[in-house]
Length: 414
Ligand SMILES: Cc1cc2nc3c(=O)[nH]c(=O)nc-3n(C[C@H](O)[C@H](O)[C@H](O)COP(=O)(O)OP(=O)(O)OC[C@H]3O[C@@H](n4cnc5c(N)ncnc54)[C@H](O)[C@@H]3O)c2cc1C
Image 1 (tube, rainbow, N blue to C red):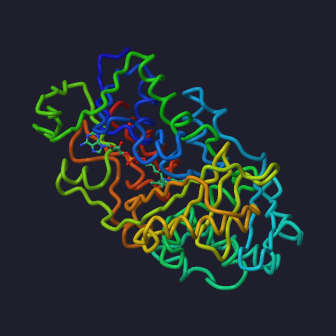
Image 2 (image 1 turned 30 degrees about the vertical axis):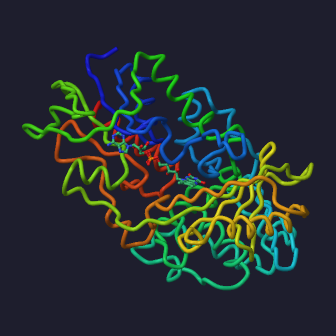
Image 3 (image 1 turned 135 degrees about the horizontal axis):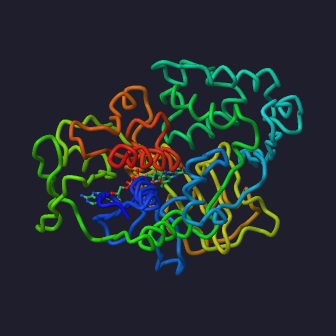
């Protein structure tokens, strides 16, 4: 073990990724998390109403999210993500009951676009090939300015997929962030965008194994430890104030702030940060999907956007959900149940349900907000920033969070 200690503030995925990277290299790590549990916006908990463990929100990962896959492999949790070998996405238009399955071929030459039964109905091979234009540099345009935002390809593929990836109305979302997603997934072929979900919950994949890994390497994780201020001296952080108790930061030591934007700007005034956020609403229904039903279905023309079938539970995700989040929970649950019924052929009164509203789920991935994302380096020598909202070049995702943690780890302990 080195004589350096790195204090990681925040045990969301970005902080955990930094902690795991450092602990794996023999650096002593102390994780300080204000909440009573780790995981931040990627967490699981026991819900009394459903009497089962649920996630705050369904998280979709793509097989090409290589930093995420590396993180899971490092903590021994690679087997927690499940999904098909190549990119397959089921869709259902609940207005007319039409169903289709998008099936990409594994390799980078997208011949699936030429197969009518594998591509988006109503859109031609040429329409699909036009997606390649998105991988080019986009400057500060919005996606609506960069590509045609109408027609079957938009309505049945681009809009639902980009809304899920960016959590922002795709028409106003940053084309550069959309391009980054396309370059790392669709452009590389079906093997790079096969859907993956944490079948046993987010904590079992992203959180608990990481905490165990850090502890097994001599690291410490303190829950309920809110960092209230940083004392700085000679362009470095010299002390952390935690619950009225000071923690001395030695001359060799480093600090990673992996906190949300509002907390980071309060702790380090002058840090640029996005100011606009978008909601995600999830619904969980205590019912099994019919045997053989797809694990994940994109819903077109409904209130629900994506349905996920877990053991004993069907869950619904709606991104860019600010207006929906203002609606009463009963109304949201009724709309979700109606869509679930149409997709999975279920009827009758809804089973036990829970609606989870995350109003500040991610920053708004618009060109204007993207410009406010800070880099990982700060003016203090031993302090780096992490978080999905920092300038990762990606939207606010697990993949961005993991990479931001790695970058911050490199800065404070080169
Ligand atoms: C409902 C929902 C659905 C999502 N779906 C997807 C998806 O499908 N795919 C995907 O890739 N991503 C998804 N995301 C985004 C993903 O969850 C985030 O990108 C990721 O979890 C962010 O991790 P983070 O570490 O950057 O931030 P956070 O998770 O916000 O972590 C910050 C941590 O800092 C702690 N903290 C705050 N203040 C202090 C303090 N003063 N002292 C100590 N600790 C402090 C907080 O308690 C928190 O634990 C979703 C997010 C939500 C909310």
